[in-house]
Length: 76
Image (cartoon, rainbow, N blue to C red; front, side, top):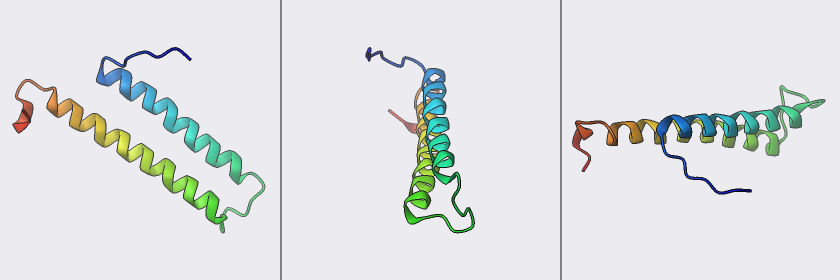
């Protein structure tokens, strides 16, 4: 795998979106044939981790946008 720097917030959002999509796809794949009303603890943990990943990426991008804005909104 080639290492490459992510230079913009937009690139980060694109790459994190791909990761989040993959995480939820893995959760869905693990649920095939399972009782969706009563997921196994591992399935519930994976779904919660994927949701946390999504929210963390959104928060990171939002903070990065604010800290890179011209006014810097109090960030130095």
